[in-house]
Amino acid sequence: MEVTLEALKGLLEHKIGFVERMGLKVLDLSPGHVKLMVPLERNVNHVGGMYAGAMFTLAEIPGGALSLATFDPSKYYPVVKELTIRFLKPAETDLTFEASLAPEEVARLNSDLSSKSKADFVIEGVIKDTSENVVAQTRAVYQVRALERR
Amino acid sequence: MEVTLEALKGLLEHKIGFVERMGLKVLDLSPGHVKLMVPLERNVNHVGGMYAGAMFTLAEIPGGALSLATFDPSKYYPVVKELTIRFLKPAETDLTFEASLAPEEVARLNSDLSSKSKADFVIEGVIKDTSENVVAQTRAVYQVRALERR
View 1 (cartoon, helix red, strand yellow):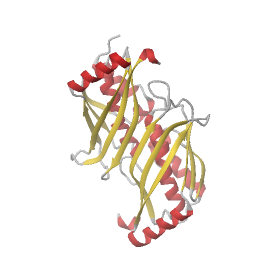
View 2 (view 1 turned 180 degrees about the vertical axis):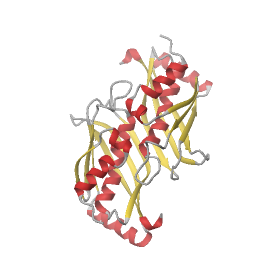
View 3 (view 1 turned 180 degrees about the horizontal axis):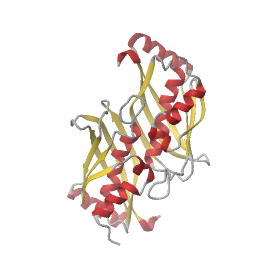
View 4 (view 1 turned 135 degrees about the vertical axis):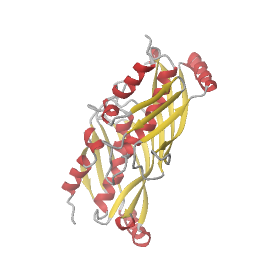
C-alpha cells in the first residue's frame, strides 16, 4: 500500500471525527516536516479564547503526522505516550504548530524499528497565534509500532 | 448572580462547543467534588480507542468545574496553566475522571484570592475505563482569578 502525502493530509483532517469537528487543517506535510492550523471559530472557550483541548490536539497530531509521513503506514502506526502543555498567553486567533524530525533522528528510529519493532521519539514545540506570539509550549512522547505487534 | 449546581452542569456540558460536541457528561457535581464521563462513541481514534484529545478534555474540565462549583462565578473565573497526561493503556470504553478539592485547600485558595485576587491549585487524577482500569494519569495546574483583574 502506498499512501500519497495528499491522501495522508485527508486522513489527518478527516479520519478522526474529533479532529475533523474542530476543523484542523494540514498546511504543510512532507517526510520529516509538518505544519498544522486550528481555527478559533468552533473552538472558543468560556473566556473567548481557544479552548485548551483544541490546543492540545493541535500539538498532539503532529507526532502522528510525522510518523505516518516518514514510516510506511502499511507497516507501522503511531501512538502518543505522554504530552505536557503549558499555556503562556491568551490564544485569541487561529493557531499553528510546526514540527520536524531530523534525518539523523529518522535513521535512529529506523534502526530501533528494525531491532525492536518499536521506537520512541519526542516532539517539543510551540503554538503560535497569527502575530507569531508563542501562546503555549508542548513536549510530547510518541511511539511508532510495527503493525504485526498488535 | 446565583448559579445553581444544576445550571452549572448545563454550562459545563454546553457552554464550550468543543466540549459539547464530544458529548462530555457531568455525572456528579458538588462544591469540592466532580465526576465526569466521556463516551467512546464520537471520540474514536485511528486504532479504535478513545482519541487522546478527548481524554485531555475529560481531565482538564474538572479543574474549571471545581472552581465554578466552589468559588462564586460572578466574581471569579478559572484558567488552566499547565497539564501533563500520561497514556498507560488502550482506552476502549467510555471513560470517567473524578476529582476533589479538600476543605483546607479551599480555605487556602480563599485566603489567596482575598490577598492576591488569584490562586493556583493542582489536580492530580486518573482516567478510568468501565472496568475500573486506569488508562491514563494526569496532573494539571489551574488558576482562579478575580473577574475585575481582566
